[in-house]
Length: 311
Ligand code: GLU
Image (tube, rainbow, N blue to C red; front, side):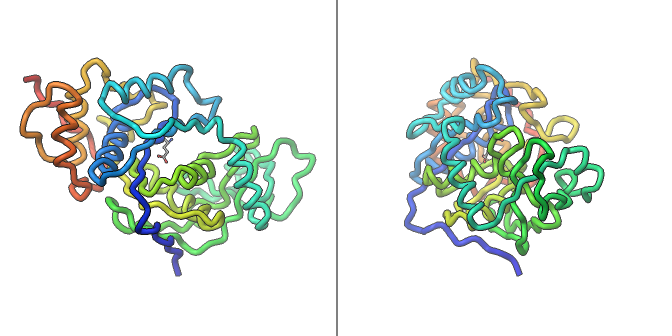
């Protein structure tokens, strides 16, 4: 048996979002996620919101949030609504955590990473939590994280790009953390609370996050929140075939010369060549939004195409 999420109400208006973490400047991989989510929202006649995922204060790079917004502007993205900052949303995450606690789904855990690594079975995302603190009171053992008791059949969802994605959370993820020992709420909790609070109907983002989606669907289920429609865009690989990521200092995109990068991201997402070479982002978007089709986006991870030669 698998849990399949309840579909989002069909009448819901389209509202998409881009949710960068300010851990560094925008690189090509995040530009692809921004472009894909923006183009799909606009072609569907929908809204596109920006949410700054600045929850993990220790990993934040000073000035990165401002730099990301300036880059989005330089690339011609126009967002709806106010920008939501997760650092302002702690009270809402605490309420959600209480709701889960009332259902007996949470427990405090005082295990160190080292203890977990020593006895946890290896999983795709590191050692699985062995359940040491599930049934004991860790009082007196120092700082505690809060974990969700994962007892669920496999979770499946229909991804608009990747097709059917299924994950067995018990064997692939285990009891995951919702609040860290340092008191910070985890991404998985915050994203679910905010996607629902902001009325996000469609989530278009990088395929690295498709392995997080079943965790998010499970939390939506426990919190009585709707499940958005998901589309996970192909992952951008670097020259060595590894995922590009901001924290690995992948090269930032060049805000002074946005058009070649926009065209490169456009081609990466399997979209057809524009009829006229655009001279600026406005011209790019003017043509792009008449052509974009999510159905053309390939599923598999790959390297970016070579930049188009200068005119
Ligand atoms: N903040 C996450 C990131 O930058 C993305 C979260 C999401 O789109 O759900 O990787």
